[in-house]
Image 1 (cartoon, rainbow, N blue to C red):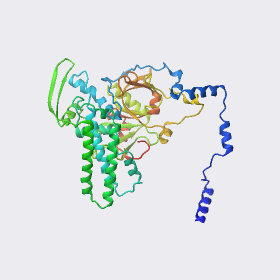
Image 2: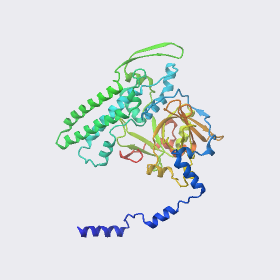
Image 3: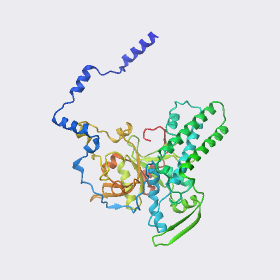
Image 4: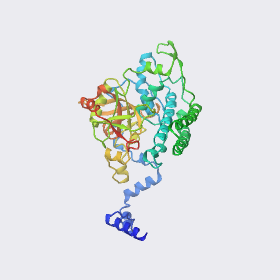
Length: 459
């Protein structure tokens, strides 16, 4: 044993792999670097007595420099509120469609039932998790895919393709047909309990497989677990309707009654004929990977048979040209970004220099977008509707606008303005009709998709 330890020590020494502790000399040098001059003392007094570092770092030079006026803006129809839930992707997907529906039926307002969509989203995600448990039953609990699945069996987050999968399969209904409940508006407790049930069920499926159970028996048990999930969802959200009658009043005061709709019939009536992943393309700016390539994230969907999260990676300048063309054509876009970075909630403005932490703290925090992604410092966290762009005399973008789903009291009457520089750093993806893409981007869509693993750093 001593020989083994000695050999290991020699190997580490030769490779220069010894970890080094902080010596007294190191500590003296580090402590000596903190010079308590008058400026440093004043900053220490401020920060040690005020926990709000962000507010103290607000860049005063930027205040009042960005307005909320836009040369080009899509016709949008009111602000929604996802409340305390992670359903931004769902609200954004439907917010893109709402203006067309309101125009079609001559309505002053219209809202989807996100509770209806949410019910089927979590139910289908539960089935996908259990199917993944069956598919990976022969792998170790330490397998990277298995640990990823167990870490979060289901959650209320997602992207555009999840809306398409669930609405295409189960349809959609107006908000009044299946209104929100306490647990659709605040999803945390219900999701936590469903995940507890799924982890229990997933572990039991693995145990059954280890004991020799065949696939048929595993699927019988899977359906028993899904019965419990359905019960939990029905108790907290209510049961989704199989059919409904939608009664509404139009702008002219006429009361209309449309009888005997099924959710699928309603979805087909309100949804554009070309609304599909073949025509609406998710494009992304991911500088960690090659541009003009298609990427497919393994298992990032909600229904077993649905489409995965697939995107075309493009440089920002290409994305901006397409996005501006779409806005000029009065077509808003699903978009997602790292909304928490450099966001001033008071003004509703996002700018990469909004908060000057470096000057306040006297440190260097500079990283480019690629480094921030690879180190997990930045990633897409929130979906919103991209609705407007302001340009200069050469029609080059200066700033953009999101329609958010945090209620009308948030930001600038429910919308957020972000500079073109912020677009470069923190906007990640949009969903856009392929007719607005360049010939080069369309050609790139023909390439074979590169599949990324379920644990990929970007997702």
